[in-house]
Length: 425
Image (cartoon, rainbow, N blue to C red):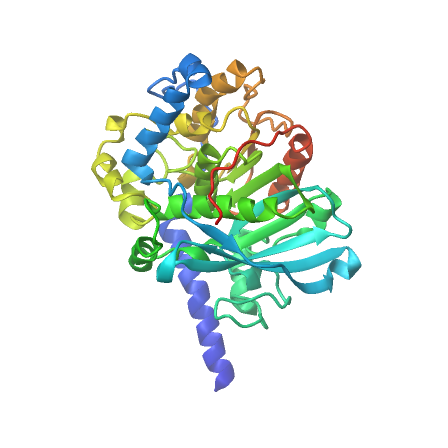
């Protein structure tokens, strides 16, 4: 009887996944993204490159437009506090490093929210570069079979999704959609730190708003994406206090919705030295004016909590927006930017993401950098805007990790420290 019930649950889960595949084939990879950009419109409106490079007022104006339309307020000065590191595995990966955990609190008063940052430090680490990731699964899924803290406050004892569900999810969304390949980051001389974004602000239409409203800031984040972006900055603030980390070589990494948050974090926090934004789609690197893929109107309907309420009026006609996503990318210049894409991930619209990067590239060149290489299919990890397009769908697979690491190794040696944007009490 028990086996029949378990089998029914497993088949139901598999059927649900297959239904999702069937109903959202463009999202999960049954079509191909176009490689032809010549027959597509250029990103509009144009960037005032000279003003953006030379006039701080133009930068402030663009950030104001982003806040007033799609994303809501960046929570300048929202308090960040943290405790002491807890060593939970002193001989992690057969002695290659340590696995440690840190409680980070954002906000003030009874509505302040605490989440756990889990970090893997190479043995003997002193001033090493670090990559900071937001994850879809809980810390239990990112570090399976390790005694990190689960969402209920106890130590993890099983995989986050269960063995069968983990197999299905990995088959659809890639081996590394949850689990982190720490050994590969260690091989590259990197420390790795990550947190489950939903432990800070839930990825839920009903729960996200009340959680944000209760944080006690002035202002609070204007949307879930802005809240997650600020969480990246809070982690940077915590890691800056650790001598094992070089605060002049700090990269952030996000996939899909968390890639959107990574782009926002880099635009607002100049301490971000390099950005990996993988398959970010709309609200990320894809142009809002593009008719392909998810589109702004679909996002506002399906995930209204991601964006600010002020985004809704633009959904019917994104051409009325006073900017497009190439302006968001331009705010990151001249720092290294990785834009990951997949040929079958039409939902994330790789074609318009490339066109956005192409338009923003002029700002990198104005800073004396080379910008984007003029080829959608050639990946150069050393490029200032490294555009990566692989076969397959919306996922994180071996090829992605290899590209992430190549980009990080190429760039973290030449970035510089910039002033803080987050207030710690």
